[in-house]
Image 1: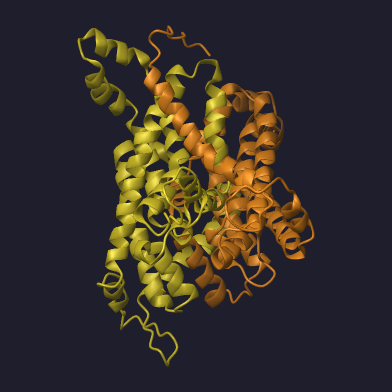
Image 2 (image 1 turned 180 degrees about the horizontal axis):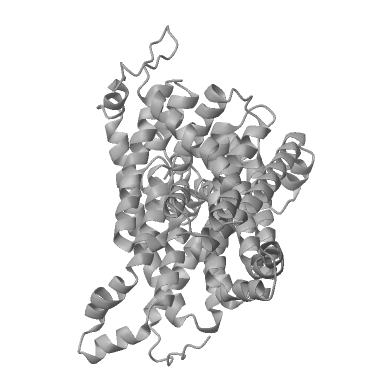
Length: 281
Length: 279
């Protein structure tokens, strides 16, 4: 059997899955995103009258702030994940010693345990009369604090939830990095800060970029965190998309929003591929 | 671990302090949740005494038991299907050169980076409007297969790329048929990767909320969906604390089993597998 025949035969089952459960569903969403919906009539799609108003509506004054807010939350959470994750990954890779594997397992455990439950734990802590409020009451800082429904709570939740996604790829690339580069930099008279920014960070940038994407992408489309820890003031784009499908029943508008979100993310992904090359695939 | 140990004087203390603070940040909320699942109080966050009543209530809650059975059914079905077909695909993508291989890898990559909410609504629209399926347990299983497959492909492919292809060529030179060499050379060598892929698929399926949320229907409620619904309606409650602790414990058990298996694989395989799963 020639190679390409057996190769394609082995790919057949996954091709069916990708075709019917990924590509076609996305194309149907694309079609819905340009379909016309009026309250008393069924949804109408026609090639000659693409209804682009769904897209302008998705970005109008009602929804654009939410889109921008989601991006701002996701960017802030990503930045905090780098800030918390980079030194930790560096420490494990360089100074973890014999316990290195143990520390990595400590990162993998939250990575593989339910995101919902870990966010729920924060609801327990931050909500009105929650654990934090209770502790503050005990030390005389007053009762009935509610920390939910704040930017702080949602960003904290996103940072907490996705932090392991930052640490693992960072650790992998720091671990792979040639340590003699750092020594060479010291030998050539660079200081600690200069070595960090001019040698270490560029050398681990594939892991850094991977971590940034792995945190930013799920964070920007997330709606669980804002659902549990947020409120009306902290609404995220994912919640609005959810609402269009399961509450308002405006599928064309929800589809247009989904396509916009997908395009926004794919731009980031192609930037990543351009940055680190095809090997990432 | 061939690395020279740094002298303790050179060990940056502040990095160590930072590391322990981050670990505390990662685990304290979980510890709090687990602790308070044993709290006697019906509501509130004051400790009023040790009790296992919330766990006893769970055992007698028929809805929770049914949802747990559903969760297991979905996770087992999705894991078996996605592991088998994902392994075949990973094998094809590493072993054969053919037109469209890069395009295929891009497709796998897109499946991994697509926001869950988009994947969820696209499957909802497809199931309802194109396939005309009744939403329920079966649509949830199909949805889970669709997002688990890419993870399995990536993890197994990482393992297959790492091993020496000359072993397969040597087997062929010695007269092994492709089928023989697949079962006797490739499969045993790729086994740790396949097990890791299956474990990843199982845990992701077990914990999925968003995609299940859009594709579920009558009879297709899983535990995460039950928890999400209860929290949305009633907020924090001790019985959800107990149920959450149970789910965490169950995930932990799966992880421990996986750890047992990967301890038998090489150290490089262990670190590499879970990390490459992400990128």
